Length: 208
Image 1 (cartoon, rainbow, N blue to C red):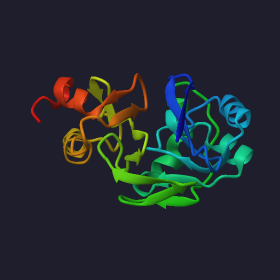
Image 2: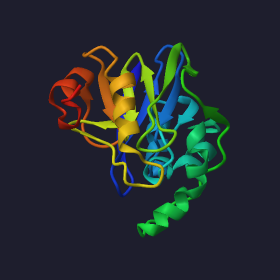
Image 3: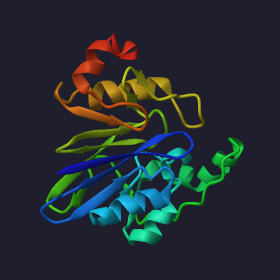
């Protein structure tokens, strides 16, 4: 599997393209803005995008959903418990003075333990709520894509509507820290890390 990374949108969110070299199939994770740049990167391969994946439905992770759906024809997959947030994302962005296109309706609502097939790759959905009610982490052979649940040295904020600190800590403790220490972590913002590094050094997780 191949991993490509782009910084997108006004909040500099991490957008990832994961691709199966053997089949040419790929998925885009969290297209949070700059849709033309993401599509340009896809076409430079070219990748055959078979899934557009949102770890959660805040505007800085879904802002280019509409452009990616139009540009690739791929199905949009969103956590089931964040479907209501998806409808509110454009309004949420306007509260920050940012204009984004409204997202299309999801083609598939994701639940814990679902499997998404990307060519020969099987991507597992791991429920990690707390930053949002339905936030998920995607686990692949490349590592995990944690959205805004876990960052290098920090965790997602829980003061936005639907956030809950205790729920987020429980998600990280039981679903992410249960993974092997050498598992790469690709968060929604900031640099990559590993499960072991966060277990040892993340100040929010030292009790675990």
